[in-house]
Image (cartoon, rainbow, N blue to C red; front, side, top):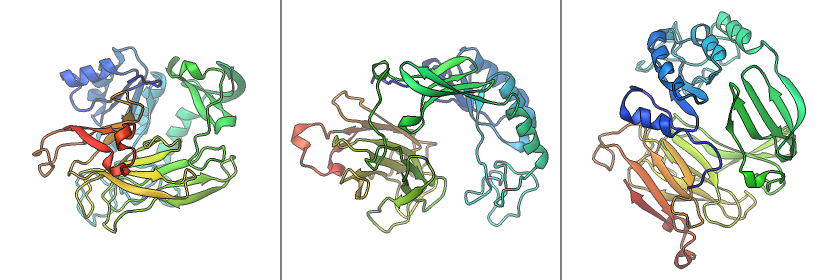
Length: 366
């Protein structure tokens, strides 16, 4: 594989175990998550900082452990660490409840995740005021710029600097965090404009999204109607059966069938099951215009996915899929053990060109 963007895989749990150390050593950016109390959080942070790479904390908000905005958010700012927390508005996923809350439990006095109520008012007004103090000083700036031949807009504050290109849908082509550059473009693209990325071939970028962490989630795409993000038209992706889906997890947009248009991938996670064992899906963009998608089940082996990425692993000219689970379940097809799953895409093989999409995928390793 020859990635043109940085790679990261985030440790959790014991940061001193060999697997965690190796994950950080192989990453271009050190990403991690920790719900530990502040003292234990600080110990893990020092392990991450020793690699002298940009840091991203991907999960941390746990008010019951004093992992809150008043305690940790100023540390992230002062040490120039990127962070985001789980949840914004208390809603259908109910992540404001502590883990293990029973069904029909009353609203907890101390929320676990989320910041705002459904009507937009804050759970804790003092907390929101603290967030504003940290994020609004100094104010960000926006200036016209040029980055490697691209006419761009440079956005900066005391933590982040990024360059976006308005004429290609505001794509970010360079990103710095704490003074360290960690997102770059393929050098072959310098001075060139790439082709449009939208699902509908109209020259602007569209959005693909799915509901996760809930049973019977939906998946679809939002058509960008005017290239100014002022008008969006939702399109649901079709289902091949009436069975209630489990929680979708992972979302990949790629040309899986090598016909020069973007297709969509997602899979069901094991922990939140639907009416059937977890499966992996591809929605084929049949007409190249986004108006005729066809669903294909490419893996139906009781092996759910948590994080799945695409890449040409076997270097044959088409994107393959490799994924890992969240945690092992006793009822999975691998006898309750952990597993990593590689699906080889054989669409580029001449002898398979006339097969259906679902027949072109081979499970190579568990």
